[in-house]
Image: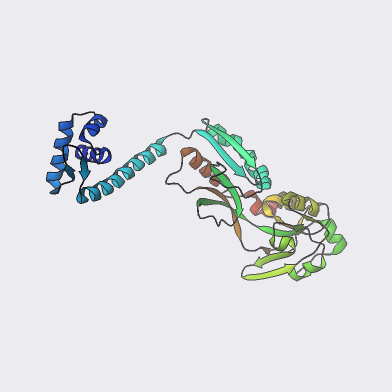
Length: 305
């Protein structure tokens, strides 16, 4: 490595004197190491004159390849150092409002207790934030992830089901097939396709598009849940929001086995870098552990036990 270090430093500075200064050895010593390397390779790496030093064609090729190798070694050293270091520093995270408040916020302080050298800055928003320009270490996203500049880990499934309150069912009846939803007052959510006017549903390999109508439309998923609880209509609601209402019997799954289409997930996403800082890795691992068997996925089974 001493021969290579001398060669690369001379190649960068194009001066034996400046290279000697950087390496903190004498100029003749640098010259001897370069000459030894040239002898081992059997090629001249530099053209030398009393006024200047220049890389030969072979020297330029060798310099470019060696420089990349050294950079990769330095990166590998840094990766190992990071893997062996303790999670620490400020962690900035963006969370969707409903899922963040209901399921992530309650576990954040336990995460901080387990990682006492991490401080956390959280932002709750349903806007599609940019991880890089926003300065976020990680974001939780629900749905599909078309952004190829990010890496992501699936932490939980995301299912939306058709629900209504017993009060609504008693007054207006229960649809038994998706097509019957056309005759009901449905709570429209603006984030669905066609501003909530079409519900895309699936049952195993069967897919249907159902035009729906209703007197209330909103861009807030919690408002959809509240409207269905109050008997104002039928809602297409995420199970992570309505699972407790289903467990208590305040809401009914109207079309068992039918869910919104296409199937999506809940992800923690982060910038696609070569390695993850320990603080980000610790956060991702913690979320994955906490949501490996999400309570909202089978609420009725829990109610029966």
